[in-house]
Image (cartoon, rainbow, N blue to C red; front, top):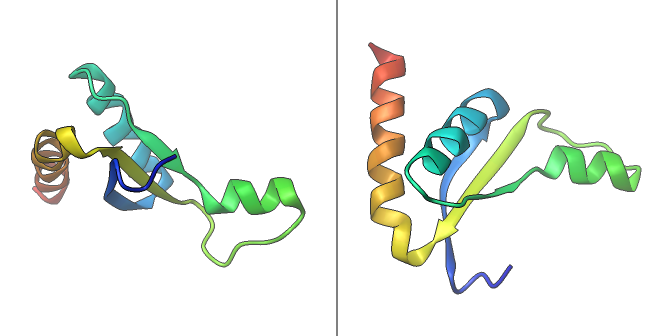
Amino acid sequence: MDHHNYTKVYAGSFVIAQRIVSELEGIGINAIVKDETESGRLAGFGSSIAGFQEIYVSNEEVGKAKRLIAGIQSSMEA
């Protein structure tokens, strides 16, 4: 992943991250999910924050993705 072309739009719970990824895909945005817990497990190391994921999208889609994520987060607070 070329970090210059992607921006982190979410970091947090696995459950919420999966919902966000699903909804991003629904509007045609391909997200990249970084899961340090799973990477550490596969490498034989532990992780201090189980279930923590980061979501990245291409720089061109950041605005659209952030609006979708804000909507998801506000609906969860209601």
